[in-house]
Structures are given as C-alpha cells and as structure tokens.
Length: 204
Ligand SMILES: Cc1cc2nc3c(=O)[nH]c(=O)nc-3n(C[C@H](O)[C@H](O)[C@H](O)COP(=O)(O)O)c2cc1C
Image (cartoon, rainbow, N blue to C red; front, side, top):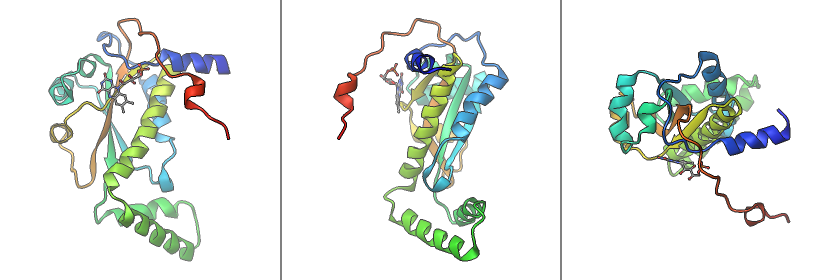
C-alpha cells in the first residue's frame, strides 16, 4: 500500500454501528487483523492483554445487554473482547519469563525485576496501566482491519462486572479493557468529522 492508500484506509475506518450479519470474516483475514494486536508495542514489553474472540451467536446475544444493548454486538462477525492482565501474586513468574526472553545476564535480570516491581507498586491502578496498552493493540487491530476492508467498532459502552461475569473471567488475573466488534458494514459510513491538522498538531 502506498501513502495515499494507507490514508484512504484511515478514512474507510469508522465506528460501524450496524454490520451485515450474513458476512463472516475469513479465518485468514481475522488472523491477520488479530496479529496486528499481538505485535503491538507494550510498556516494558509485558504484552498485558488477551484477545477473546466471540463467534458463537448465542454468546453474543447474552453479551449484548451488558454492552448497553448495542446492535454492533450481535450483528458483527467477530466480537473481540480485549482483557487487561492485572496483578496477582503469580505474576512475578510472568514478569520473569517476559524479561528472560531478552537473554540478559542474571544480575541484569534481577535489576530489571526490581525496577519493574517498583514501577508496578507505584502505579495507581495496574488495571488502568494494562488497559492503556490494550487500547494501543485495539487501535492497530482496527487500522489493519480497515486496510483489508474489514469494518470495526470500538465499544467502551459496557458494564464491566456484568461482562466479566458472562465471560466467567478470573478477575484477579484479567479484566475487560475494551470490546471491538469486527465485520462488514451494512450502511454507508457517515462523513468523517475531525478537527483540522493545524488544530491538533503543533511543531516547536
Ligand atoms: C475507546 C472508545 C470507545 C468507544 N465506545 C463506543 C461505543 O460504546 N459505541 C459506539 O457506537 N461507538 C463507540 N466509540 C466510537 C466513537 O464514538 C467514534 O470513534 C468517534 O465518534 C469518531 O467517529 P469515527 O470512529 O466513526 O471516525 C468508541 C470509540 C473509542 C475510541
């Protein structure tokens, strides 16, 4: 894709309110899109996310009331629930595993673990920190989806506890950060409304 086509894909992407229920995303396209999430950057490289893809229609129906009854939830092809990992005592083993793959000397690893632990202890909310990383992954997922003509809608309008209960999540380990509906639009996208470049960008 050249720059013009990439920009066109950013215009193509919109918060799709209603999907064509009859159209399913081919498995390889879905894999491509989800991989954009998996390959996203994360603070300290901790990848504090999990991508749960809801394809079962009955489960989507169950989820919809917990998402402010939004029709995207039941009309989309795939309903992606991005969960944020949260702190629990077993997580230290996880940090170690994630740092260890950088193949550093033992002393440096210990140092990393100490610095990281201090960072985590100083956070106001581990969930909030993890969720911020999830939003980066979600942005990549939606942008890559648009590049191959797949529509999406980010959904923050949900009742977190209700949704976690339906999904039977162990909330000491992970909690819902964001929902992204993926599929194909049934209506034309509305005109894109954005502030101008000069209103949001300044150079110093
Ligand atoms: C974090 C986040 C949460 C959102 N939650 C919802 C939602 O629950 N339902 C919805 O219809 N749109 C939701 N939106 C879509 C925004 O309203 C939309 O992106 C914005 O109005 C700009 O329009 P566009 O994306 O079509 O260009 C959300 C967007 C973001 C980034």
